[in-house]
Image (cartoon, rainbow, N blue to C red; front, side, top):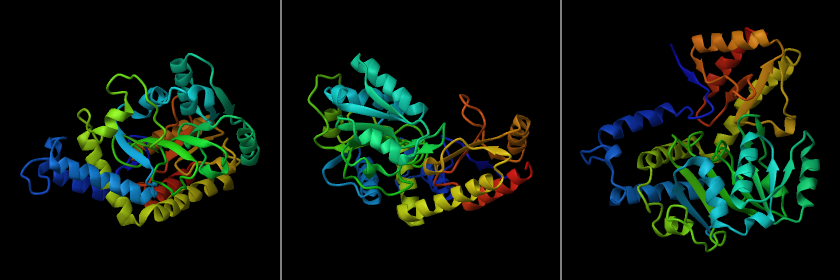
Length: 352
């Protein structure tokens, strides 16, 4: 049975990348040992690390006044790492809350700073109305989750908040579209959605963002900068997989092609759902609909259960909505093919 993996993460990896990884697990670069055995202190890993960073710089067009480090701990560690390295942030930040993960980050910031942090919640208004609420606040920094995987809400037009410096959790949509860095201070993302497997978190930030602070060793951004992400043993294999996925994105045609393909796939599913709106519930306003996580439900809950059960039997995996809200979630990450999406829509038609 053919497996079609629509999981929200860890997510599908392109078949050609898996084939390459399989070869390198047996022997890497004719070295007669596995990629799993690479020392993080070796020239081999240094070259691998530099190549990975260069691909990120080129694909994302990262300006020269930004640093890149690779950490562990996922996006959740960033809820402590960022405020620890920017102790004056509490008094100068507003949170745009569009879903679950942003709310959790906001809560962690409040716990860390032991004080209330300003926030602006998305309440179903238009983007223009939401932007006006944001830009009128006096805070310099704005935190946002660019794509909320649970609710299927995405905000990509960062430069509309042109009087703010953005701190963005891009864990589920980094390297799925191009964006401008003019008003961005810090971007971070776990790799396990679009860039590989769990274990490594990409942190990209302005050189002047970090403040001097008395921190324990791992929590100090300066330590990781000085040791080029090898202050302690980094997740070498996760970084290697990210390199292979970045190479695949380049071969695909870069972010413009990736974004175009993702939009084509997402539009085909959204169009089908809209055409059958009497059967489905879509709670996200159209201008906020995610291209990465398409969240919906049948109005007839019995059909939801029947669809999910049948999908599993036919090899469509990861379609359950998050346990907190239920329903159906189709994760449309970079590696999901057009055929996978078309086949899923054909399968969905059988329940309409």
